[in-house]
Amino acid sequence: MAKKRALIDAVLSATRSSGIFTQDIEDFPQAKTKAIKGGGEQATKAQLQKIFRIVNEMDMPTDVAKELMKMTFGVERSTQLTKKQASDFIQDLLMLKEVRTMDEHNHID
Image 1 (cartoon, helix red, strand yellow):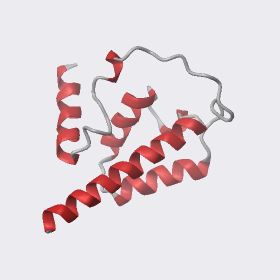
Image 2: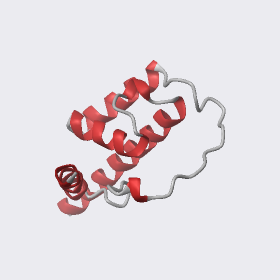
Image 3: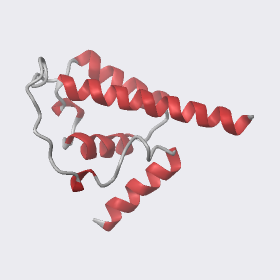
């Protein structure tokens, strides 16, 4: 467990994304989720392709993306994501990408 937390901490520190993701999500109380239209359906091929494209554009190692997905949604593979989870993960990745881009611009200035 310590090794896992160290890996997550390293990723969050290196990407400066601790404001977006947390390594202690299992410590939060489980919220009761309401049924959302399309929430239980499997992620679409287009959603999965978008996830892979964003991860590649960010040069994020696949195992890091998998760990973020596992921490956030509790799934081992992207094909296990629901449509809602895939949509949320895409939004998280886009936000992380934007933060990294802003950070790069701030270091150049």
